[in-house]
Length: 136
Length: 351
Ligand SMILES: [Zn+2]
View 1 (cartoon, rainbow over the protein chains, first blue to last red):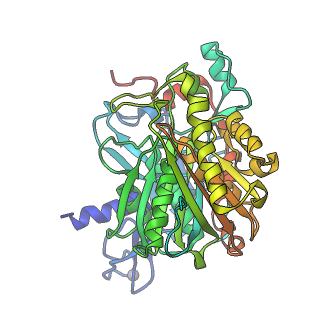
View 2: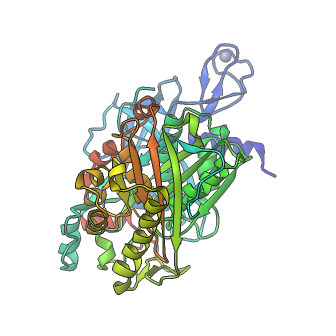
């Protein structure tokens, strides 16, 4: 049987599932069951669009074990379109200039894996420059 | 009756492509190995260091869901065909299902049949939906193929694929007319459980493998449906290179124009299980209502699946709801062999 808290963490990490406050409609990420605005209980799950903007960023030239294949890489503070601010790694940064205000979108990628090819692979959200504007 | 046709008519209600952004020129691979290159294949797609068949399936799956306009909870099966599942034991399907927001009351399975694992999942899905066991299912063909450094396969082994959501024909953007599968025990290409790179029997890859199986599937499908090349607007063949699909197309009476939209190997290389689903996504991106599309896959070991579709007027509603295949092809960052070797874990960091 699966631990419900663990299950919710996976949804949050794989697909940016947070919460919406039923009282004041504030969108919450990561989910914490209590609204940061009005202080009331907020347990309704909410699927974020994955769209946002870079608020701030830094370039990492070396990484800890499990991240070294990826170096150099960017870590950014991202303001989601729905409001919350989150920290995430940027990926697929090509010729685009990374700057404050650049639009980004969420993708699910490998976060970490054991270098010896024996361990489990951890997947989670990262952000990349927007591929193609799509009319929703 | 050799045709595979479900009780209730089935169609594609959503489709989604994925191709990673990195490219290596085949001339760059030839420079390192002093090899001959890969003819008309100019470059191949390379996955980033944080990508694998699971992450690529998730993105293609999200694109397909956006076009299908159905809740992820309504998908009753997610079947992923690949020869590069990240785990030898642990299904890719469960992780992809979780990330897509599918319900836990779902069939999630991984299919393996070399390069035709994706169409295998599609044909099984036709039965699953056509029998009424499921209203919607998702079939994915996706690969991050690798060739031994310096081997002839290294020039073309690429990454990419497509996700297709099947549902009732009445809701679909393209109705599946029927399918046919042909297999025989042929030792042309294989990879043992713990081997990183595949082996291939050089003399087996052309005539007795690709052309024989695709030829059988194609001829039987055309005979059984009473159709000829002229009845189809577009055709997609498995594309391990550019030459094989061009040769079989010409022999069967298809024009280069019928083949062009779904022939992506000159631009991104051979995406293995991803090749036919991706070629189909690229073709659906430009197809018009009423167009018929024929697709014929090939998988080593060996076998071929043929199936055709009739595009409906819904195609115009769904097309713009997710990125086009061309958007992924156009988004490219060229890398050299050293970066490629790092990304594809040909350099060992930890030993
Ligand atoms: Zn509130």
